[in-house]
Length: 409
Image (cartoon, rainbow, N blue to C red; front, side, top):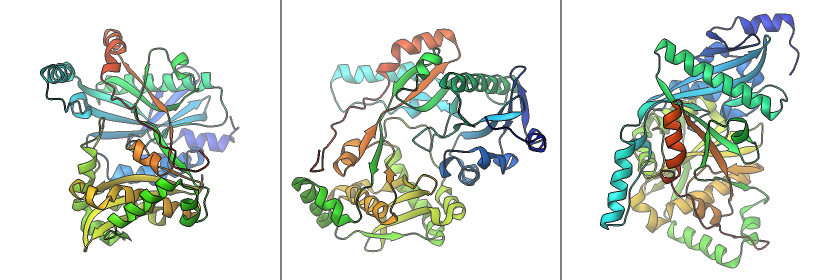
């Protein structure tokens, strides 16, 4: 932990926001406006642009529907030791879990009906520790080097203090807590035994090790080069164009509709974006956000977005959308993946992060998967006991077949 000057401690202590005293040594400063922590937030942030004041203030201007963000600074003996992003969601589990079956048999349909009926009453405020808009552990940020035991103890104390404070004020009625995106080996299940651990789709990424698309193609096995050429042939009519702020303003409703075509088909979804989200992103991030439209004969049928993280020399593939009815004939999504890869090579980044979902097709262009797990608990011990026994039957199946497109694999 770095030692602060007396003046710096006084400045941080005087920041606006509500203060919750956790114990004699620890206190939590809470605000629903990140502007109250301007300067201090970025000084303590080590997670790059996606946990920056700049990005989070953008989300605050165009928040996902039904989601409220809070920014928290944890102090130990007047020195900041952690900063957290907490999000509270008006949670309806039946709407978030897309439970269905394509099997028209009586028993499979009955089982789906029973599962939907069982979760129909799970409606309350869910506290999310992290950022539901992103894949990865953004929103849990400790200052300096601390042992894992101390980090998780500080985190647990902060989460409980926040939930108790909000419930006492009747601002929210928090019943469940979700901690998102831990990496394997962090031993959080040992140090946070009240929480149950589960996984959903893995986090997909590509390490960029080529200087050009020609280098990339030469590294592919023959059948994957054939696949690349076939995709380009089918997508010959597709025109990729970077969108200006004016383009985004003009097409924001269309882009939202394209995004919804994809988001409504995922197996687990906690939010819907704000229709103004991409406009606000461009206004705030400027050159650090790349949004490209995909057109056929001047009609936008798809788009994708990339955020440049200069601190880590990475690109993060953000949200996209496409017309599903035109995807197969043009191989739109496959061509979007190749366009993202080419942009990453041209930008000379070391890695492009491709988020979750569509693992198999992403692996066919060279992406690898990393398992991230989530921690969940209900604050009622009885409900938590039930969750431990039945959670697995509700978690979507994330099995998939990894592809090996490169000659050296």
